[in-house]
Image 1: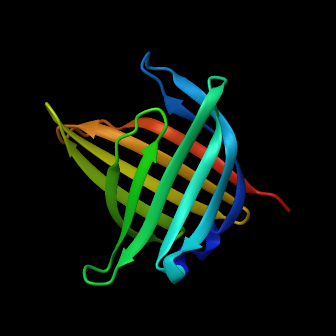
Image 2: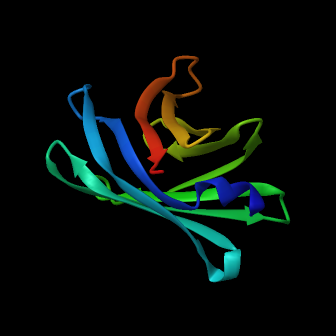
Length: 145
């Protein structure tokens, strides 16, 4: 879980979420990453606004030593469902993927890129194995000095 250390603490967040009309809805808030369960888990609690209304997310990060993969579980106040991702470290952060099967298969890819006092987060989706990815969430996290 040492790879998650750069996340710990409080961050100012600005970003956008893909809305039902196909436009990107602005999100502004504050996020706190904390160590939980004796360091076995990192939790992110983001609280803010989207389109001027309260918005919150809860994301849990863990490391599965049996598979040697990171795990991410996410839910937000706009959708309520749980998304479960698996992933690994990258040279400058993490990359996670999830697959959701509904009437068609949706693949989600979420990347965290660390750069000094900034983290960039981007989630993309594609349908049925297509090569066309669409950004559904992007955010910049800035640590206050």
